[in-house]
Length: 242
Ligand code: ATP
Image (cartoon, rainbow, N blue to C red):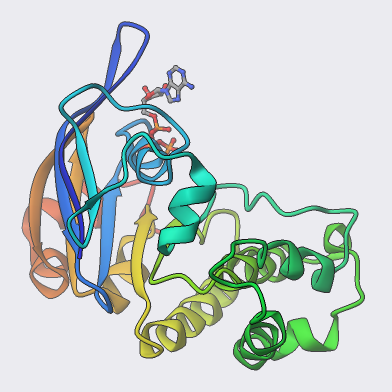
């Protein structure tokens, strides 16, 4: 179980995360929904050990405290992040990018098996293993980023807006692949503005607003919730067509 409790984060004077509590069981998929600037990326970065939350915050995996550990140690305990913008190396090939994801001791010695698993999940990457990442489409680059994160053999995969900038048909394909990742027992924590498609594969969801969690429910209940529909799926919403 991944448990975030009373997580507070300041950037200087600005309180970006205000007493956040969320949890995800292994094998569960949760979605964090919120408008731009709500603090969704900051939450993932705090869990990943990339920013330092305030004293009194807690991020625990199976009861073990993670706060204060550097990012590489968080990967080592089994939590991988696919950052917004993907963070892949454009001048390296698909295969070189994947192998960089296997640096964690928990994945060492497993590279061949993990790589075969990633290529099975993304057959397109197998066909293009020698292609430079910067010559690939946005959807393919997102696959490389997810594949690289999976190379570390995570128990939890966190994804920051994986659908951003992708055409609807590519988003559909991407989420179909995430379903297959779910089936391997990996827990998913997905930050998204694409409400329909992300809740469509989720067990539960949280609503974030101005650094706070303002709602939590089953994915189905959130899809049917009028306030969610108004905020994210309404006729005048900028997110309607995403
Ligand atoms: P988006 O969907 O636009 O990525 P978000 O919900 O992920 O938004 P965050 O990126 O976590 O939101 O940002 C939350 C708040 O913290 C915003 O007001 C943002 O301007 C601020 N913020 C984020 N990173 C920093 C930083 N490094 N320094 C100062 N303020 C920051």
